[in-house]
Length: 111
Length: 115
Image 1 (cartoon, rainbow over the protein chains, first blue to last red):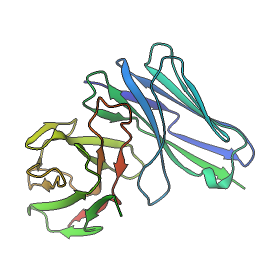
Image 2: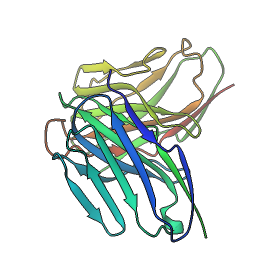
Image 3: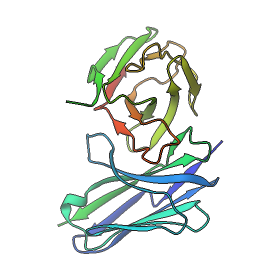
Image 4: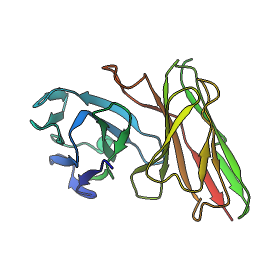
């Protein structure tokens, strides 16, 4: 079945440093979505990428979808303590049936 | 308010008992999902449903059962056959996949503890 791998599993950064998490799928995806889960909370949708090579920005967050539609990345510039949480990618299979989540990257920011 | 509601937030059960977790949505979404999250881990798909009266197994369906008799409701039963049922259970819904906007909305989750 479809597998979505995410690295790193954990990342500690000093406030102001940049952060990147990477996501790789075993199969070509229809789209890729990114979610953020704050400690004790539930995942909240951030963004969706659909087109090959697509890049989207949300303030300090930059999302990329690979040319082969099998990998993606999320980059945060100049992290803040409010960025703390676990970031998940989720890939929708080409049949459009199943949303598979990566294992998540837990970001910790030291003030 | 539109949204997806899970109840209860915390649930305690004795080992060997079946327990049913509720998930209701009023977003008129066709697709619904159940995920399991263990401490410090990602989300693993248990079951998903694209339409009423139809559902498919995810990666870890053993020991779980679901029903989808109504569009709004997708209850999950954790049976006594599930060897390690203690976990955080998340329900989600989305507009029928295949549409461009397939964002998933999550409920607040149910923390199940089996003693």
